[in-house]
Image 1: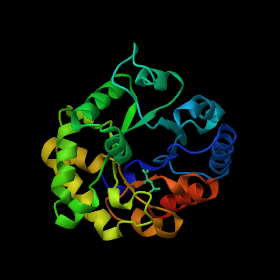
Image 2: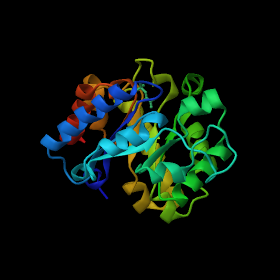
Image 3: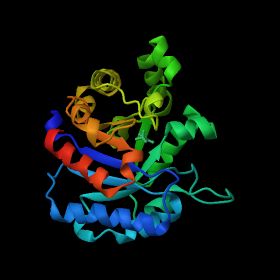
Length: 264
Ligand code: PEP
């Protein structure tokens, strides 16, 4: 499968930002853009609001945009229900109309100590209820400086994803997010992003075969914004972006959709 036919995505990770009126204003701005601009069938947008606003945001999106704008959660737990105060289950996320869930974001790994094994359990549970995991991987600065970033990411994928059979793996979306580029204003160069995305496809080819390696969507994340998106999105193995800061304003987020549509 060529890059042209892979699913292309701009996904916004709103993190722990915005109040409900702002969340609604933002999703309305994105909806307006998508209602007035045709996107190719294989191009779509996802927003990942904080969990208290998932229902509100999912409900505000018109059915006509069903294939163009979807909602994802930023996290999920590994159980369907029970005495797990404060957690939300994949079943609940799916029940309120979300299609995606971020798993393995570096902030979850760092601040909440999420291990490879725990992330593997989340992936399994999400897939069980047909939620699509957007699985994040990426190396911290000291690993990049030591030159062992490809091995580091390989371990993240092996330990949390490579237990999946090929059919399940084909449902996953990957996001390569070098930790040193997240929220820092420092972007990976297009060459650095391409090098890792190509290396990830090689890992997938070894584990699952070339067809899977060629068809999996791999997003880049880390200070991606309208000013640098064109050169990142035009790399042969970059299929779009997972966007933090620049996803909080409708004009910058929709500009990223426009750029992906043009050069992706
Ligand atoms: C992210 O949190 O996934 C991210 C890429 O953030 P930012 O775009 O702000 O670096």
